[in-house]
Image (cartoon, rainbow, N blue to C red; front, side):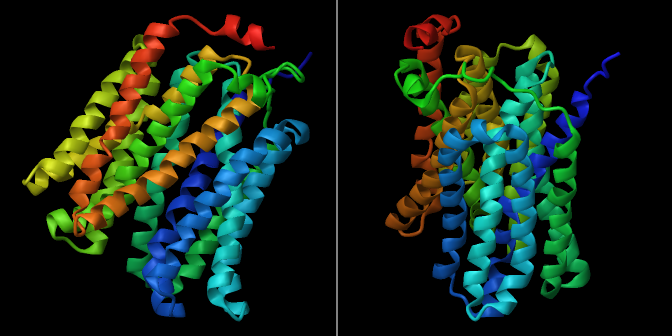
Length: 404
C-alpha cells in the first residue's frame, strides 16, 4: 500500500521559508546604528545594504526563470535555506576577520539575499502545486507568515537587546540562523510536486506575448510598491508625526504595520471561500488609498498613525492575491510566471521607497508629500483590477493555447 504524502509538512516548511525571508529582510536594518558606532561606517555607506539586498534578490528572481525547473524545486529551495543560514552566520564572523568590516557585511547580505530571492520564487508555486482546496485562501495564509516573521524579528530582537545589550548582536544573529538551517531538513523530506508537468509550462517569450500577463505584472508592481512605500517609511513617519523615540517608532510603525498585514492575510485565508478575490482586492485597494491620504493629509498625529497601521490591512491581500489571480488566469504559467511576478513585486518594492524619499527631500524633508504621491500605486492597482474584471472575466486557457 502506497504511503499517503504528508503535505502538511510541506506547508510547515513553506511557512518557515517565509519566516526566513522576514529575518533576512528585517534584521540587518535594526543594526544600522550599531554598524555605524562599531565599525565607523557612515549612513550614506550603510544605505548600500538594503540596495545590495534588493538588487541581489531581483537578479535571483530573474535567473530563477532559467535554472529553477532544470535543477528542480527541491534542490533550489533547500539551497535557499542553506544560503540564508550561511549569510547570517557570515554576518557574525566576516566583519571581524576581513580588513574592511563593511565588505564582510555586504558579502553576508549577498548570501542571505540569494536565499531570500529563491524563497520568493519557489515557495508560492510549491504550495500552489499541493492538492489543497481553497488555493487562494492557502496562499494568503502562507504569505501571512512573512508578516509574523517580521513582527517576531522586531519584537524578539528588541527584547534581546534590552536584556543582553546590543553589543551581543552577533549571538542573536547566530540564533536567527538556526531557523533556516533546521528548515533545510524539512525541505529535504517533505513532498514537493511540480506545478506544471515537465515541458508543458509556458516559456518567457510566450508569457510576454499575452496582454493579460502585462496586466498581471502591473498589478504585482503596484502591490509591491503599495506595501513597501509605507512599510519602509513607517518608523520614520511614526517618529516624526508622533515625536517618539526610535524604539517606540519601530514598535508602533513597522511592527504594527506588519501585524495588521498578517491579520488581514489570516482573515482572508479563513474567509476566502465566502469572498470573491478580485472584489476583495478592489476593496483593499480603496482602503489603501484612504490610508495613504490619512497618513499624508491629516494634521492629527493619531489619525496619521491609524492610516499607517491600517495600511497594513489594506495591502495584506494584494501580493498573494495577485499570485492567486495569476494562477487562475494563466494556469500553465509555471515557474517562469512566478519568477517574473516576484521580480515585478520586488521592482515595485525597491523603487517606491526611494521615490518617496526623493520626493520628500524635494519638499524639504516633508515625508507626508512623498506618501501623498505614493497614493498613485494603489490607484493604479484599482484601475488594473477593473480592466481585469471587464476584459478577462474567464480563464485565459484559450489565450495560452494560442501562443503555445
